Length: 77
Image (cartoon, rainbow, N blue to C red; front, side):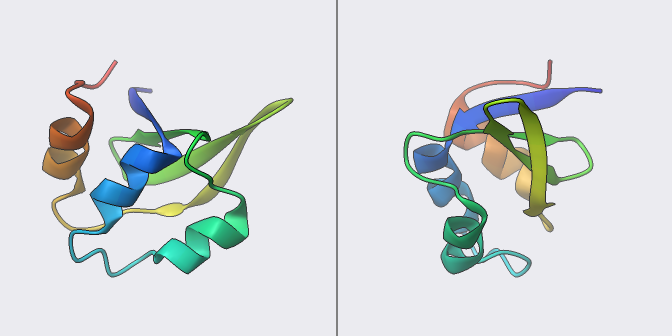
């Protein structure tokens, strides 16, 4: 499965673009902070890095692929 990894700080920029599925409060409640490591797969599933693995914390909808690539400067790997 391919992902793009980013920090929580970068994720805030991605969801600040009319994201309907998740809010900043949702992500804060899931434990996302500026320094957090998060990743999104091509299906839009968001995962938060925990000490012993990855936890699914929600999903992105809409034109997230473009927004994620633009915010991170990365492509799917």
